[in-house]
Length: 115
Image (cartoon, rainbow, N blue to C red; front, side, top):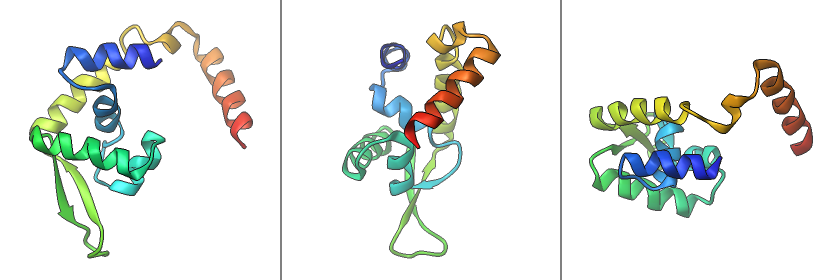
C-alpha cells in the first residue's frame, strides 16, 4: 500500500504524506483531526500542512467555534489536485485485486485486530 501511495504521489510531485493529507481532507479539519486521520503525530501533520500551504493547496482559517484552533481548507487548486490524487489512488490499488466480499472480510478482521 505504501509503495502504491508513493508511486501515485510522485506522479503529482508530492510526497506520500502530502498525498495522504490531501486524501484525508474531503472537508475542512483541524490539524489534530488530520494527524489522527493520517495516523501520525501532530508535529508531522503540521510539517505536511505547512508544505501544502506553501504550494498554494491549503489554507488555515480560524475555527468558527474555537478561536484557539485553525481549520485546514483546501484551496480550489488543492481540491482539484485532491480529486486527481484520490482517483489515481484507486487505479491498480493493491486492495482492488480483492473482491468486495474479500475487502469486507479484511476490513472486519482489521477492525477486530485493533480493538
